[in-house]
Length: 190
Image (tube, rainbow, N blue to C red; front, side, top):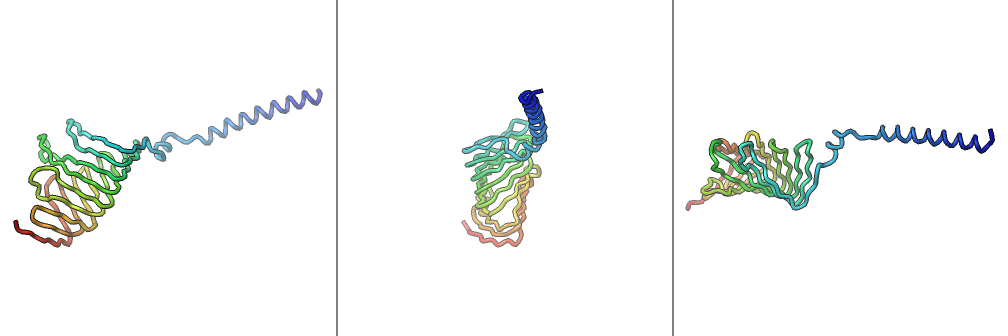
């Protein structure tokens, strides 16, 4: 065999070996689909607006945000400057609703389970004759399954003729009961 034929055969064998090695190494570096879904968001949005309905077709959440990152596999929304309306239905059989507006600097929501709001959190009722006209705190946790709002931080609750300050809020929206640790109230007659 001549030198040129040997060189050609050796080159061909090296090219085949390199192709096999390249293919094998590419297969080794493939990231599983589950890991991709866990690591990367399903979508990101700027100027987000969305609604969430229950099984009976009643509107339960309206959410807007400056920007949103959504992870589908966790049902997780991370939001900047969220603005939301939570529609509370005191009577499950009725369409009568008591909507509450919630705003914050940032927030996250696991769909149907919980929401957390941070930084200048404000809650305002959007229905007639509420007992509370606003509530403000730095952090808020909203358990959507139990209809329970909690915060360990200081909170200011304002009503038609009172202002109440305290820490350790626990508000049960179903029972319409509010528990506040270390309360300090100021009542203002009409």
